[in-house]
Length: 142
Image 1 (cartoon, rainbow, N blue to C red):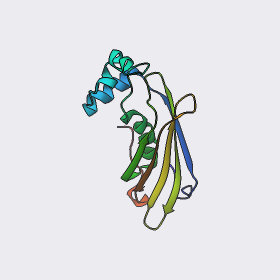
Image 2: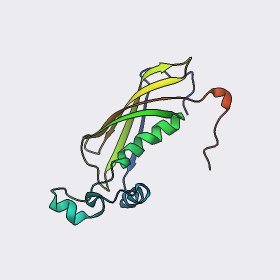
Image 3: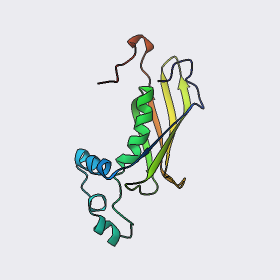
Image 4: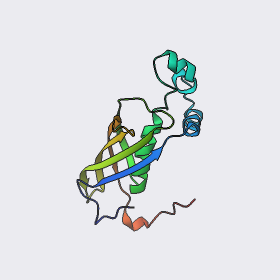
Protein backbone atom coordinates (compact mmCIF):
# COMPACT_ATOMS: atom_id res chain seq x y z
CA UNK A 1 0.00 0.00 0.00
CA UNK A 2 1.27 3.45 -0.89
CA UNK A 3 1.76 5.84 2.00
CA UNK A 4 0.89 9.54 1.98
CA UNK A 5 4.60 10.31 1.86
CA UNK A 6 4.89 8.26 -1.38
CA UNK A 7 1.72 9.61 -3.04
CA UNK A 8 2.53 12.15 -5.75
CA UNK A 9 1.72 13.12 -9.29
CA UNK A 10 3.71 10.84 -11.57
CA UNK A 11 3.60 7.81 -9.24
CA UNK A 12 3.35 4.67 -11.39
CA UNK A 13 2.09 1.29 -10.30
CA UNK A 14 2.22 -1.83 -12.48
CA UNK A 15 0.78 -5.31 -12.26
CA UNK A 16 0.91 -8.27 -14.66
CA UNK A 17 -1.23 -11.38 -14.78
CA UNK A 18 -2.07 -14.08 -17.24
CA UNK A 19 -5.73 -14.44 -18.17
CA UNK A 20 -7.04 -17.99 -17.91
CA UNK A 21 -10.09 -19.59 -19.49
CA UNK A 22 -11.37 -20.04 -15.92
CA UNK A 23 -11.04 -16.25 -15.35
CA UNK A 24 -13.15 -15.60 -18.46
CA UNK A 25 -15.79 -18.14 -17.45
CA UNK A 26 -15.94 -16.77 -13.90
CA UNK A 27 -16.26 -13.17 -15.10
CA UNK A 28 -19.03 -14.15 -17.52
CA UNK A 29 -20.80 -15.95 -14.69
CA UNK A 30 -20.46 -13.10 -12.17
CA UNK A 31 -21.42 -10.36 -14.64
CA UNK A 32 -24.00 -12.55 -16.44
CA UNK A 33 -22.41 -11.33 -19.67
CA UNK A 34 -23.07 -14.35 -21.86
CA UNK A 35 -22.41 -12.65 -25.21
CA UNK A 36 -21.59 -15.20 -27.86
CA UNK A 37 -18.19 -13.65 -28.52
CA UNK A 38 -17.26 -14.40 -24.87
CA UNK A 39 -18.65 -17.90 -24.43
CA UNK A 40 -18.61 -19.57 -27.87
CA UNK A 41 -15.19 -19.92 -29.52
CA UNK A 42 -16.71 -21.18 -32.80
CA UNK A 43 -19.00 -18.16 -32.95
CA UNK A 44 -16.06 -15.83 -32.23
CA UNK A 45 -14.06 -17.47 -35.03
CA UNK A 46 -16.96 -17.02 -37.48
CA UNK A 47 -16.91 -13.33 -36.47
CA UNK A 48 -13.20 -13.14 -37.41
CA UNK A 49 -11.52 -13.55 -34.01
CA UNK A 50 -8.97 -16.29 -33.25
CA UNK A 51 -10.90 -17.44 -30.16
CA UNK A 52 -13.53 -16.34 -27.67
CA UNK A 53 -12.90 -12.81 -26.42
CA UNK A 54 -12.36 -12.21 -22.71
CA UNK A 55 -15.11 -10.04 -21.18
CA UNK A 56 -14.12 -6.36 -21.04
CA UNK A 57 -14.24 -6.55 -17.26
CA UNK A 58 -11.10 -8.72 -17.37
CA UNK A 59 -8.71 -5.91 -18.41
CA UNK A 60 -10.59 -3.58 -16.07
CA UNK A 61 -9.98 -6.04 -13.22
CA UNK A 62 -6.21 -5.76 -13.76
CA UNK A 63 -6.49 -1.99 -13.26
CA UNK A 64 -8.88 -2.56 -10.33
CA UNK A 65 -6.17 -4.60 -8.61
CA UNK A 66 -3.91 -1.55 -8.63
CA UNK A 67 -6.62 0.81 -7.39
CA UNK A 68 -7.33 -1.73 -4.64
CA UNK A 69 -3.67 -1.70 -3.67
CA UNK A 70 -4.12 2.04 -3.07
CA UNK A 71 -7.47 1.51 -1.28
CA UNK A 72 -8.84 3.96 -3.83
CA UNK A 73 -12.59 4.49 -3.60
CA UNK A 74 -13.50 5.07 -7.23
CA UNK A 75 -15.89 7.87 -8.10
CA UNK A 76 -15.54 7.82 -11.88
CA UNK A 77 -14.04 5.56 -14.52
CA UNK A 78 -13.75 6.32 -18.23
CA UNK A 79 -12.63 3.40 -20.38
CA UNK A 80 -11.69 2.79 -23.97
CA UNK A 81 -11.55 -0.88 -24.92
CA UNK A 82 -9.15 -0.81 -27.86
CA UNK A 83 -8.39 -4.46 -28.65
CA UNK A 84 -9.82 -7.74 -27.44
CA UNK A 85 -8.05 -9.80 -24.81
CA UNK A 86 -8.09 -13.59 -24.83
CA UNK A 87 -7.46 -16.46 -22.44
CA UNK A 88 -3.70 -16.99 -22.42
CA UNK A 89 -2.90 -13.30 -22.80
CA UNK A 90 -0.48 -11.77 -20.34
CA UNK A 91 -1.94 -8.39 -19.39
CA UNK A 92 0.16 -5.64 -17.82
CA UNK A 93 -1.67 -2.74 -16.19
CA UNK A 94 -0.08 0.61 -15.46
CA UNK A 95 -1.74 3.21 -13.25
CA UNK A 96 -0.13 6.68 -13.28
CA UNK A 97 -1.26 9.34 -10.80
CA UNK A 98 -2.10 12.54 -12.71
CA UNK A 99 -3.54 14.61 -9.84
CA UNK A 100 -3.27 14.44 -6.05
CA UNK A 101 -4.98 16.76 -3.57
CA UNK A 102 -3.62 15.71 -0.18
CA UNK A 103 -5.96 18.00 1.78
CA UNK A 104 -9.09 16.48 0.18
CA UNK A 105 -7.46 13.06 -0.36
CA UNK A 106 -8.64 13.16 -3.98
CA UNK A 107 -6.66 11.67 -6.82
CA UNK A 108 -6.90 11.07 -10.55
CA UNK A 109 -4.95 8.55 -12.57
CA UNK A 110 -4.50 7.33 -16.11
CA UNK A 111 -4.71 3.59 -16.64
CA UNK A 112 -3.38 1.46 -19.45
CA UNK A 113 -3.51 -2.29 -20.04
CA UNK A 114 -1.26 -3.92 -22.62
CA UNK A 115 -1.01 -7.50 -23.81
CA UNK A 116 2.21 -9.50 -24.14
CA UNK A 117 2.92 -7.89 -27.53
CA UNK A 118 2.78 -4.41 -25.98
CA UNK A 119 -0.52 -3.64 -27.73
CA UNK A 120 -2.87 -1.43 -25.74
CA UNK A 121 -6.00 -3.42 -24.88
CA UNK A 122 -7.61 -0.74 -22.72
CA UNK A 123 -6.94 2.83 -21.63
CA UNK A 124 -8.85 4.88 -19.13
CA UNK A 125 -9.06 7.56 -16.50
CA UNK A 126 -9.91 6.99 -12.85
CA UNK A 127 -10.96 9.52 -10.23
CA UNK A 128 -11.53 8.82 -6.56
CA UNK A 129 -10.31 9.38 -3.08
CA UNK A 130 -8.03 7.64 -0.63
CA UNK A 131 -9.00 6.73 2.92
CA UNK A 132 -7.95 8.84 5.88
CA UNK A 133 -4.84 7.36 7.55
CA UNK A 134 -6.67 7.77 10.87
CA UNK A 135 -8.88 4.85 9.82
CA UNK A 136 -5.87 2.58 10.25
CA UNK A 137 -4.69 -0.20 7.97
CA UNK A 138 -7.30 -2.56 6.50
CA UNK A 139 -7.06 -6.29 7.02
CA UNK A 140 -6.91 -7.60 3.47
CA UNK A 141 -6.44 -11.24 4.43
CA UNK A 142 -10.15 -12.02 4.56
